[in-house]
Image (cartoon, rainbow over all chains, first blue to last red; front, side, top):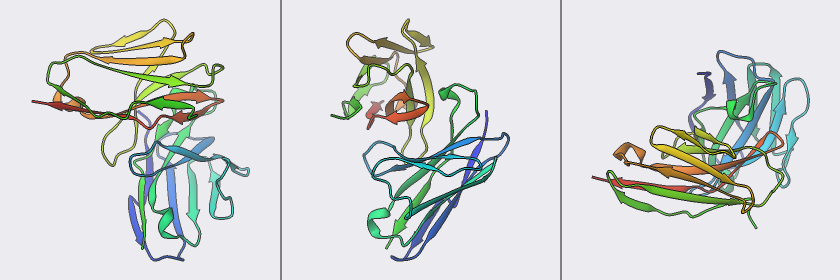
Length: 117
Length: 108
């Protein structure tokens, strides 16, 4: 099946620094990518929908100035957590969907575990 | 009320047992539902889609009851490798809404 990669797989940073997470579709072009966050023992929560060449659509309660999303090409979307704080520590997962395909062909990346000290 | 609700479990069953999970959803307009499996510290992986007519894939059977707004997953002849968290997922305008998951532990 289709492959989505994320980099880095884990990151530890100091409070106040910014962290960039990359999401790549390796063998297909993804017009839409999604960014999720998952806290321990909780469900995946959609943060934003990223469409290639346009601004991301953020879910209610997600600060767009704190979580910067860039989808500059059909194979790459990035999420930057700006001025990270300990409460931002979480498991960040991206997924990619090809336009026209059913929702169940949404392909997930392996996730990035962020720990903010 | 959460859009998708699941019993968190854990369900602790012996190998070979049959186990069933239920999930309720609040958006009656949703058309598509799925079961995903998530292993510890891993991304979710699609287990199966859920259709109104019900569908079966080997030891797994999924059912959708639109009148009562719940979906179910039945696992027969449980294997040790079935131990994981099972996520009930609803499609809402091409966005996936995840339940918090039901944890299954299959013991030898």
